[in-house]
Length: 155
Image (tube, rainbow, N blue to C red; front, side, top):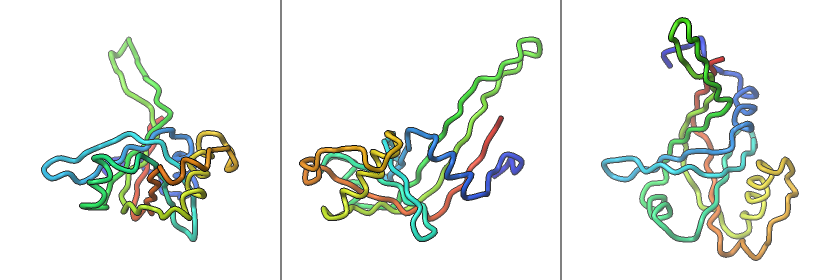
């Protein structure tokens, strides 16, 4: 990281940023170019690891990419605020961001409900937000254990 003065290293502070974000962008390996998607996500800290949960249809291009190579990178950001000084003609953006990498694992049916509860809880501020259990067999649910990440903030 070039700007170490903006780096955030405290894990709890990084988790707070992640919890403020509403989109996680996943970058998949797709030959010559990465394939990036904005996704809803759930988050959990378990046994000292941060785990992100995602869901999708049972088939599609993303699922093909996961089968070929389950390594992914992610990015999420929040607290955007344009800072403009018209006297100096200076413009910048305040933000918080987290980037990292990990490996996607498709979850078996018996583990999907817990992951979907985490996903729903991220947006409903409750781990017990209702979702129709009939969706479980027709939903692909996957998780990523974060292997490495960095975070930064510009106020």
